[in-house]
Length: 368
Ligand SMILES: Cc1ncc(COP(=O)(O)O)c(C=O)c1O
Image (cartoon, rainbow, N blue to C red):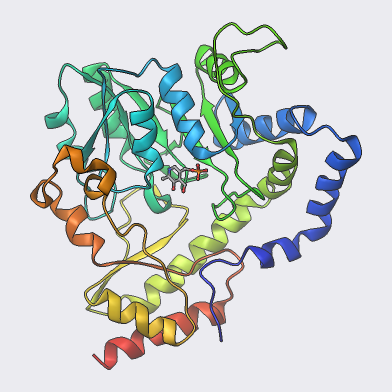
């Protein structure tokens, strides 16, 4: 058996007729930028998220940049975020002119909310929690801290479509939440795509305007903007796929339960820590393994693909060397970066395939 890390081909084959038809409708109309299909997807996604607005943009990185910039974050500001994420979270903070300030993670791989307040100073303007691997950060506490210090909150939800925690869905209590629809994400387009959701009418309009060269009406450029629109073909694909997102999410949860049950007795492995009242959507299933490199090699030799998300915590990336961060400042992020291993997970993964992965992890454990 050969187990891919994700298999986008399987999903396409299952929904080929519907997806091909949606793409062909765009081709037949030859309307590739803007139009009813964009609006329809934005409305459906906003409804699914329980927010007033969704603004489709070119990718999840732009979604963050546009939102931060339109919230007035820039030169001289500090923005607090997690030490563990993908580079897009902090490169967009820097792109606005602000400085990313990293906070260590907890055992759940999410920003340690206990350490946020000690990083707040008079320059702090915002907090960008990351709902890493599909589990929401503690938005209840983050919102309280933000209110106390009058800070903006933008949720990086690139990996957390439809997650909730403590009865709060993504985008419910923040200024805005941003999404990536990169092909491998829980809701993935057939190319780059992203979105911003918010309940703030003014922010929604500003983001829409900035993402489209500063215009809401053709040729009326009220400000200078950028070109970051969601392609019509991508919106057509996303609208079809959105109908299945709940079903796919529950399949991901079933796979996570299967892994959890089958692997819980393995002492050299720490399973994902799921917080009370949290409903993650398992974009990734990340275990912490004592002998990660050997385990990954063993699985590879049995045709099981795994990955590492991410090998280097953000403060230690070469591009942030100028900040001179030390390992002791981020002990958990540092320690976990040598242990984390993402096991294969995608909605179409069969029970036999999950069992095959579990069996091999057990064999590895028994033989070491
Ligand atoms: C946590 C996080 N934030 C932001 C992004 C950026 O999204 P995109 O690749 O669509 O630009 C990603 C994508 O991998 C991500 O995982």
